[in-house]
Length: 373
Image (tube, rainbow, N blue to C red; front, side):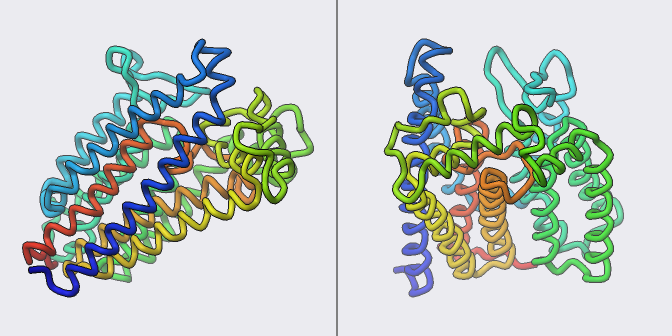
């Protein structure tokens, strides 16, 4: 027999699943709509990206189901080891024989033709390392504190080295969010936060191309054919969409005008084809997903489980806001996709892994095997 709280947890979990499947289905549809002309011209098949995304979706769903059947205490227990493996994958992006550069950034690794972007999984490995680290910080030995700190700092350094400032920002803010929710001493928290912000801003302004992006964000019309081209085309897509849109499949901007139309800027295609109404519905679905995610977290009886569930939702919500902000011209351009909607196997599978982690917390509640600090 389930208790009242457990029944409510099951109900909220089903709401999350329903919204997530709805968002993912729209994502599959929009990947096809935004890429079929480009795919036909370049790869000879209009369904090239759609079929690949469908396979990634099936893999991601399987990963989510498998992970959800585990106990989250397993991931917390071996967080340091899991993060070390994921950091190892990140290090491979600096090894020429394994690394693949895209637009000047070495963010990918390849094995026998199969590629992956380790920065997508490092977001979640840092979570399962940072949660017990900050929650139990005062109980750790000096050696444990050093190992945990190295485990978090090293991936951040590599992300800057790639460079991948977008993923660095998300990982840094995720760590800060966990630190804020945990029992980590406040006197250290504010000092580390200010130091991290100073280092992050300093790193940002050290690279000329990042300053150029900031200037482009402030005035994209100054260089409309070069650095400002992408965001201007995004503006035009939303303008063309008006309230009801041009109709599914009728985007003009995806006709080789808008770069990354099926990836980072897929939200622009949604705006053009489905209009303000479609944009509003997408935003509403993400708001509902985050709302029910936090409602789910508040039903959990374990403090660590609450922090984990909250952080998964924070990460997905943060990346969604950053992507939409960039596409709408509210933030400087960054290479971040829209979770569960943009094309990309690494992102889709890893985000489903995060959802699996979210649901793995239910197993502790069912068994009354709570983990307290």
